[in-house]
Image 1: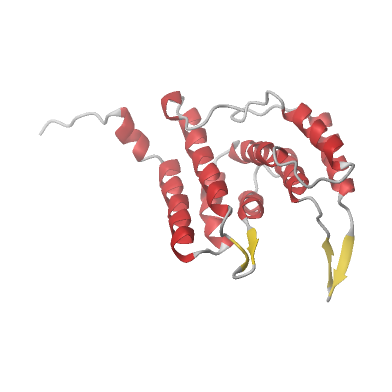
Image 2: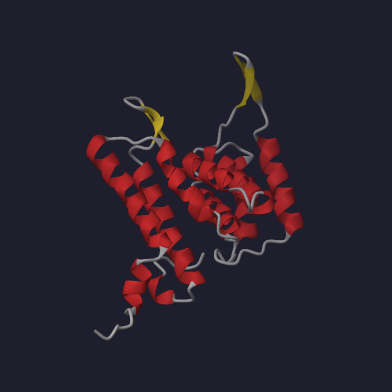
Length: 206
């Protein structure tokens, strides 16, 4: 039998990113059915993050998402959010190129804004009052210094998706669903961009 060429959609459906996206959607289904899931299930992203340039894009993607959540802010926070919006304006998620000095200075300001620590048993933990600014800081941290550390990418994904629910504690539940879906769309968009086939990009560039 003469072999036939795969149609574009068939080739696309076999991309690793589609498999990861399906696994992320499975987590969503499990949360919707049982109410929660363990954050460690997001470790499936580690292998995907091994491809060069994906981690910096992911860092900026999460920073951009978190910067839109400006509710319940202190007096200083609105100014920091304004700076974040300025530095992320018109940034191409697929090819982020923020001036390093600007990114480093903003990261330092964000870290100093929430630099209180508290002793707990035999260790010291950082006190975070504004999780969204912490996520922006973490996204910039990944963009600047951890472009080759899949574990840092997983940690950022977990921090972004985790939610506290009295019945289950901290984990993947409730609002986590939409955030996991956002990451699934990000995975597909990056793979489509790498294949230079924008027909399958599920969200517009930010």
